[in-house]
Image (tube, rainbow, N blue to C red; front, side, top):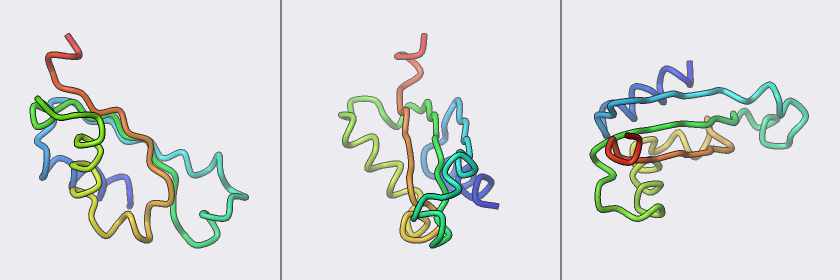
Length: 88
């Protein structure tokens, strides 16, 4: 469920030309964050919305898009955020 929700929120907020969400939670099964229900995810987002933004600003856009999911459903999040021009 969380992967689909992450995809939906990032697609709605950033209109990416490429989006890949990976659930790495099974690799962290004994981790404390898993006990509270939060998953480990990695996102690759390629979007024009990142143009002219620093790495910190790009990550902030992703965090804003995910909103309250960052409080409970997501314990750890890896982010690769780039523009279409950077991926050429």
